[in-house]
Length: 260
Ligand SMILES: C[S@@+](CC[C@H](N)C(=O)[O-])C[C@H]1O[C@@H](n2cnc3c(N)ncnc32)[C@H](O)[C@@H]1O
Image (cartoon, rainbow, N blue to C red; front, side, top):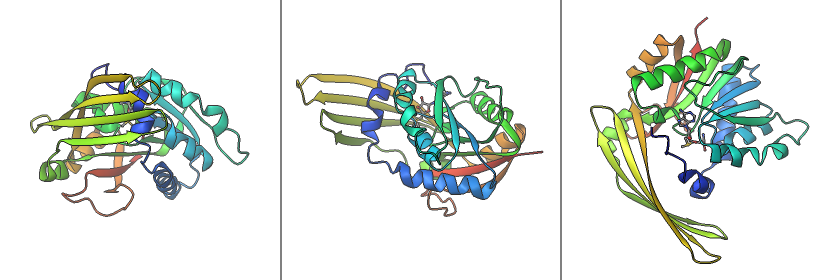
């Protein structure tokens, strides 16, 4: 992934995903964490973005610490951190700028999360090895690593298509054109996003393009990366519905447990 990825896009991230149901997702993740280990309290979140899952999980009582590469995302996320700590029953959410493959925090966590395809942004075998190894390094005995990725059988069956998305809020009208390029040898889809943002205040138009390279995974690849880095695959299912993955399931959630 180029260093530029998410640099300009990140400024519009929350508007682009304003309709994504983070509450339902956080409820589902909280249930999965507690089912896997009722004592789960400390959570490390890889690719924490603008902190929407992290803040909601804090409301569920978890202490969540995020590592996020985009400084713009970290700044946005941290602008809310005081609020998330307010409720007495709440845990806390905070985050730092860093790379999930290499950033080391000198404390263990009960669980590591990587939500909304963060692992799919790790496109080479070496990237995935480093990400999984870093998750293992930060987990206490029996800890779990929970993430969702693009599912190879669905990507090959349904094929990525050109899509346009329009969203707006009180100040901005945003159009995003997504043009995908499939590479079946590398198991990647490179999506070229063309963004047009029009200010409703002064009609000024901002236009830019950004490429995001995403990797899709087959279950046997995840099993192999897991084995190499000290995990067992405990569950895999469609994210949110918990249905068995099929060639129509674009996002599959994996729950890995650190081997003792
Ligand atoms: C699709 S966004 C998901 C953000 C957030 N988890 C959410 O659900 O809104 C993917 C995020 O992963 C981050 N990311 C990708 N690779 C990363 C890496 N190697 N280290 C840190 N962050 C990374 C990106 O900067 C981006 O914020």
